[in-house]
Amino acid sequence: MSAILIDGKKVAADCKKLIAEEVSQFSGRKPGLAVIIVGNNPASRVYVNGKRKDCAECGIESYEYALPEDTTQEELIELVHRLNEDENVDGILAQLPLPDHLDADDVIYNIVPDKDVDAFHPISVGRITLGKYGFVPCTPYGVMELLNAYNIQVYGKHCVVVGRSNIVGKPMSMLLLHSNATVTIAHSKTTDLAAITKQADILVCAAGKRGLITADMVKEGAVVIDVSINRNDEGKLCGDVVFDEVREKASYITPVPGGVGPMTRVMLLQNTITAYYNHINK
Ligand code: GUN
Image (cartoon, rainbow, N blue to C red; front, side, top):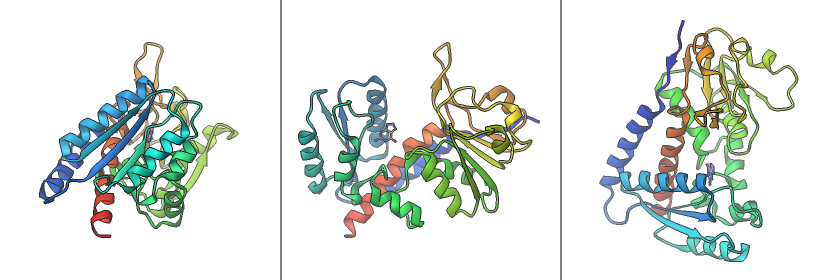
């Protein structure tokens, strides 16, 4: 058996089209997303360019604040406070990682929760834990939408999440739990990872370690979602899953690239629309 390929590019394009149609109906001010980037991290520059393009395609205004590497914490916080008050700005995102001399947590805490489209603020995290979602972190949100698009039921399933980051592993586990899955979180200190992953009906891999998940670690017919973006020895993008062998065992599998990545981008637009509605209805 060869797994059905989950086409994140297609699902993301369909979602984007719906968002663009929705935004085109708005009269007056369009939704606005402010993106802060500090320094010259090349990967961050690529991500921020992608966000600008996505916004433009959907009729969302994007405001980019590209600050020099030597920006101080005070300058950065001052900008965040200004954007908190800016009536044209519905969502604020500080592209991570920040240069080492800056405190990312302090920046996140200073974004008003109403504009926290990354859902990284402790209030957003608390809401997710309580199942009372405002904003949903973009990558886990994208995974849920992919499962939904392929009619993959989560209710009652055993979901194993490999990775416990604040951005993916932890919120992913919460979203699955609130969808009535039984959730196990595995991580780099888990003993006998294979014994855990083999129990998964749905396996979400977010460890950031290429080659980590081999076919012998996957149950026949499992759904395999690969969130990670790594590079192989030839410099090509790959996930945590050894795709060619695992696809022969899984029922559904996401490729890297073209799986979860495009969904993450779209869910940021969705959160910006949510922020816009909340803002205009305040
Ligand atoms: N850097 C890598 N991924 C992300 C993300 O989801 N949000 C922000 N703000 N920075 C990132």
